[in-house]
Structure formats: structure tokens, C-alpha cells
View 1: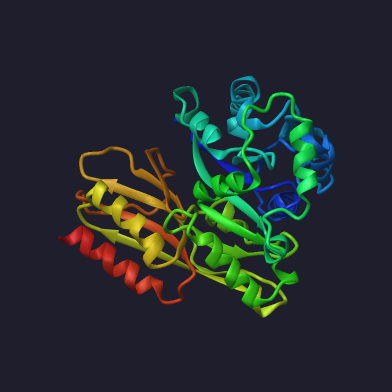
View 2 (view 1 turned 60 degrees about the vertical axis):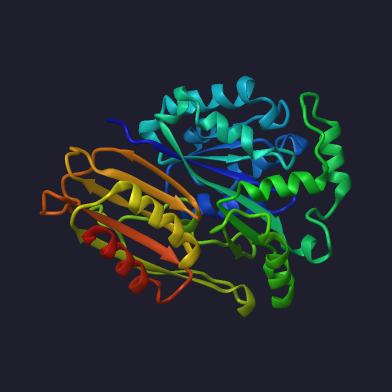
Amino acid sequence: MKKRLPVTVFTGFLGSGKTTILRQLLIHGNQRLAVMVNEFGSVGLDGDLIRSCNFCSEDEVDSRIVELNNGCLCCTVQEDFLPTMNKLLLRSDSLDGIIVETSGLALPRPLLQALDWPEVRSRVFVNALVTVVDGEAMSLGSPIGDISILEKQRSEDPNIDHLSSVEELFEDQLKFADLVLLSRADLIGSDDIQRIKDNISSFLPSGTQIIPTSNGHISPDLILNVNRSSDDQLNEGLVSNHNHEDHSHVKIFSSSIQLEGKVDREKIESLLKNMALEYQVVRMKGRLWLEGKELPLQLQMVGPRLCSWYEEVPKKVWQPIAKTGGMDLVVLSFQENAYNGIKRDLEQAITE
């Protein structure tokens, strides 16, 4: 059985910092990633910036970076997005994931719907929809630094079929976000950061976290996946998004939890979604062993988005001795003391 590939979608206006963050992820993520780039308003620029970061060998780069320049990706789903995704999935055995960098004009919903089409969803899962917000521009009162750039991009797109205002586009990018990255946090003060968080929180799904970033630096674990050690056991430890400014320093605490007992899938999945809000969970990854099921249930959660499916696991991974079932999870949270509460809630859920 082939593993499903994680697809991570980046949204945000042109100039918000998407490509800078993406370059850092490609360089430091230690994963074999393919990238779709849809910044048609600056044809070739973003693709060149990604190529120049040397994230893969020269003989692979043309097959790992795909530039879609025919217009806003959400308006060309059938013509561009799905055919390109299907071509990349032909090489799924040689990839760890796919990243889609959308145009600043893109509406997230059509892309998420396309990833849920029967021909695609059995081979991928939506790892996260990450919205990049320009912190410096927001501190000055607008989600985009130069409105004329967006209008130029819109005028150059012959295939665009939506004419949403800047405000409507921004709200749409936020309301589908699983994670928000506030870029250029080093250029604004802590009061500005808090004010921006307060202003945009009402548009976000409950449990979606906002993380300040500077110069594109972000722990790859928060975006791409929770790394595993060589024996495929779930890691535990401290993950930090370091920044020289105290107001944009973010610590993420990792907890590894292994429990045995009868597991109710619906109860656990509902509980995990609630944890995203209660314990400020940024990401969760793991497996549930359910009574009567031959394969474990794979779990992947970023913010409030939870994906689950049955899949084989390597022989060396931890498995419960009890035939009734169990769970093996790693949780990344902003709260240093989240581990005790999360473990307590999960223990109660499998013993009741």
C-alpha cells in the first residue's frame, strides 16, 4: 500500500513572504519535496528564487519545481492544478510531500475541493493550509504593502473569474487557514503583533494558531510534519522558532504519548480537535490501533484540521500489546505544561 503524500498549500498576497519561508523549508526541512509555484504576476521570479536555494540536485530540479503561469490557480483547477498534481503523483515513491504556493489572488476553497476529488484524495491528504500575513503591512493598516501590485497582477490574469476585493480575499485566506505565519515580525513591536493577532483572530477557525516569523525562519516540524527518528519512533523534545527579538521568539513544546486500551475513534478525533484550542496545539501526528482493525489509523492534525486514514506501518514501530487497541501520538503545543493535561484527557477517553 502506497503512503499518502502530504500536500501543503501556502496562501498570502504577493510580497507577503511566502517564497522566503518556502526557501527556508526546502533548505532545512530535509524532505524530498515537489513545489508548484503560481506567482504568474512575476513570471519566473519565484521559480528562480526557489531553484537558487539548492534544495535538490541539478538533475532533479526541473522535475521538482513546476511553475503554473496560466493564471490564478483557483480559476484553472481543471486545466492546470489537477493535471499537474496527477503528474507529480506518478512519482510519489520518490517524494515526501508536495507544496503549492498560490497566487496572491487565489481563493483557497477551490484548491481544497480539488484535493478532495476521488481521483486525488486516496493518494494525498491536506497537510495544512498556511496563510502568510505581512506583519509590517498590517501594522500600517493594510494586508498588502502595495495595492497597485495586486491590481497589476489581477489585470494580467486573462483567466480570473472572481473579482473579490482585497478585504474579501484576505478574509477568505484567513477563514480556511490551519496555521497563520505573521511575516516580518522583526520589523514591528510586540504591541503591534498582539494588535494584529486580535484583529485577525475573529476571521480564523477556532484553534488556528498565529506564529510570528522573521526572514522566513520557522521550524520545519511546524509546517511540514513531525520528524521521526531513524527507527520511526515519534520524537519528543523542544522545537523553537528562534528570533533575535524577544517579541517574536516562539517556543513549541513536543510531547510523546503512548497509551494502551480500547479506543473509540470518534471520541478521540473529537477530543483532539478540542485540544487544538484548549492546549494551543499547533500540530499532532500519530496512530490509533482500533479493536477489530488490521491496520492502524493514521492521524495528522494542524490547528483544527484533522485527517485520518488506515495505512500499514513499518515493523519496528511501537504497537500496543493489548488486543483492544492503543495510541501513539506526538503533540506540538505552545503550552509548556500541555503534556499533563493532554495525557490525562486521553487516558480518560480510553478507560471510560
